[in-house]
Length: 217
Image (cartoon, rainbow, N blue to C red; front, side, top):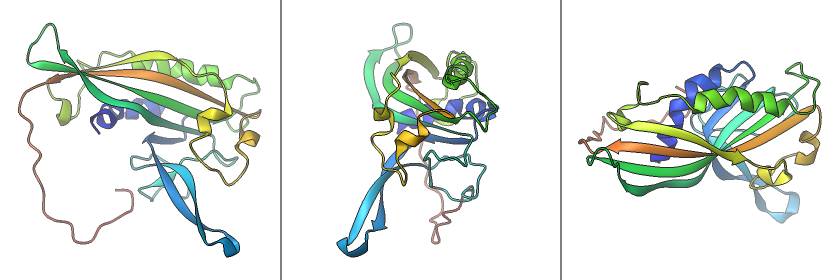
């Protein structure tokens, strides 16, 4: 998805935040097969991401679950709420189209491992993210996909604290146990705009890969 590549522009600075341990980028909801005694095969939904940045025993896996648990300091990932839609020409430059979409940034924190005692640790975490969103990405080095383009991120609003933030997924343990101190969490919706240059872009295939390596490069 184009919106996924746009979000990846933020990755280096989000990963560099001192409280971020497990960053997953844009996640997918995957149905993981599990055996349930005599009832046959059943499935549970978990968030996984390809672009993981993990400092745990799963760091060599290309797809890794981003589930809250007491061994982690934090989990941070994005969910796409609406892929890019075309909003017309850029009023200043006819050779640019305005693409607009929305994503949700979900964070879960283990305050004890972060050395914090307050109940609203999420406020500090969110505050550290805001300046990253409002940078001038026109001047920043953008991926080749967005050459001669511009990206804007705008904070739409916080989501109320609710178990519903994690409701798309199934967890091995009751998620409610990870929503009260010493744990905390947040979700913020972000509008993403790309002023996309209409210059030519070539997708060039490389040599065929006969043996796929599923480990993290």
